[in-house]
Amino acid sequence: MHPHLDPTVCESPRHAFETLDAWMVDDATIDEDGSGSVPDAHPLVGEVLKATYRVDGVIAHGGMASVLGATHLRLRRSLAIKVLAEPYLRSEQRRQRFFAEAEIVAQLNHPHIVSVIDFDFAKGGRPFLVMERLHGDTLAARVVHGPMPPLAVIAVVRQVASALSVAHTAGVIHRDLKPANIMLVDTGAPDIFAKLIDFGISRSPGEGRKLTGHRDLLGTPHYMAPEQATSRHERIGPHTDQYSLGAVAWQLLTGELPFSYQSKTDVLAAIVDEPLPRLEEAWPHPGAAAVEAVLARAMAKRPEDRFADVATFASALETVLNPRRSE
Picture 1: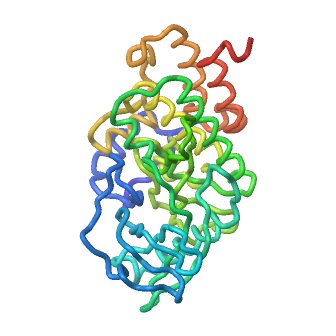
Picture 2 (picture 1 turned 180 degrees about the horizontal axis):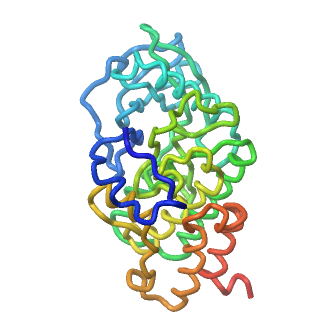
């Protein structure tokens, strides 16, 4: 169990994380470097699920689930199937969270959110989620090659913000927004087309405390908002996703993380306690101060100090990154 910390009353949080060497952090479907850890085989490869989906091979593997390539036998359509990992098949909480993801994404009909087609059980009671198959790279795979041009950053932030706005209107908080959970889809056109691909630890309106314990730390440390890093679940809301999108934008512009400590404990403590570094040191461009001001507001320590919503943040960032558009 990790220590619970209220940043509004604790003068220095670092000590609260000093003994934290293992926590409950759900892994992404695809690893942080975007490459994924692909096993040689999976028990379902070669199977035909529900007389409809032929499992052809493994696309990617993560801590909580594997993603398999499949073909709809009647429609001859290429699909992706997400399957709960073997160690969690006996975990009722993990199974319920997997069910929740299916329900959540199925309700979020948006061009920048991966589409869910079906949900069912394979033999042995293994739950699986059928999704559209996306071709391209994760944003994590792209950012390892260095910073992205401002116009590309604008496109990603605008599209992801649009997807999050629909989720937030439906009462859904993503809670794990990061480059590994954003696909840059190959559409055959030169324009960027981004999609959110993982709602595995998102929170829906009816969840309450059923799937999240009062001390559970859910998310990916480098992109967590302070209220998330301290497990203040009652404070987590749309502004939490806004913070994470701000961290993603910072990384896309600079090629670096805002808080780039190697230690997880140091990252969490910095998110809660340290001011953002100066953007111009990592991004020495004209207008860096204006861009920094926008990102600093989106990543403010207190949720109420951030922009009113994620769409307003995206619009403000576009204005300072592409001032000619507003002329």
